[in-house]
Length: 176
Image (cartoon, rainbow, N blue to C red; front, side, top):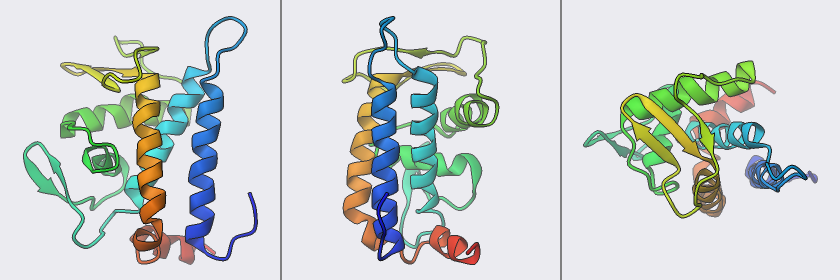
């Protein structure tokens, strides 16, 4: 981290650092595996944060279950960002809620995840990041990294237009 002249400048650095930390987790260890749990936790943190900067943003909607919706609340609504032009996915509201509850919350708050058929796997990066089978969702970690990289790159290009007037920036100013 360097010194920054603005909150947007700081965020450009922090998003890129979280992305780099994720990439480092995905380098193979001597046993042939990578640090999948921390990498996945970081990617869900990035998505959550991207969504937070679009919460209550005028004119910003994404298509969820065939309807244009805004990110109006905290929690899983931040994951509506997955269906935006940042990630270019088409997830249902139920899938986003499941990702939030079964992966993001458990990984970030309990360093765990459910054992009821949900798993992280090392799939092909060009395939879908989430394999959905009813209420079960499996995470293709390399594919999730690919779409997360694209999302961060796209956000960083727009950050000066998005962040300064965002609800999240207003909340952050109150915390200083």
